[in-house]
Length: 221
Image (cartoon, rainbow, N blue to C red; front, side, top):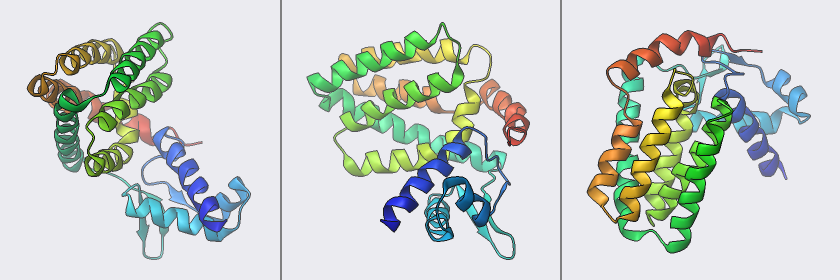
């Protein structure tokens, strides 16, 4: 029961971090969080330890738990690794995807497309995660899937912020279309290349993300 509560609390805190409600550097008070979620401090403490293991939270001497902050250099490095993992998933998916998974991928792409009119970056963020998750699963490599999700979750606040850059959603949709086509064609090398380019941040995209970071810090309750 305690494990279930701690996992539920972990998921709640992770969502708050991802959507900027708990910004980088924010102190996480166990008592306040326990009251917020209607639980004792024990599952909160367990949840914070789990998030610390995932890199989303830092446990600091005398200060306790705070939402992890990532500097520009480390951010670039993490996105570089994420791009390689995504590319590998795409390359394997192009060879191994099942008919059911292919249909699910097309449906997920259409779901992303339907969000375009709303212009809602948070809703697109959710649909985008579902799209990429299908590619991960289609790689048929459980260890790769696990590692890709770990880093994807770690980068959630920053990936979400990227979608607020002007024209990023339409650009992302165009990239999705090409990725789906490559996977359907069984072109692993092309899928790998497209997914790497889809995820990597450099040049103008890096500049836009760094310029947007103050918004992430300002989104606390």
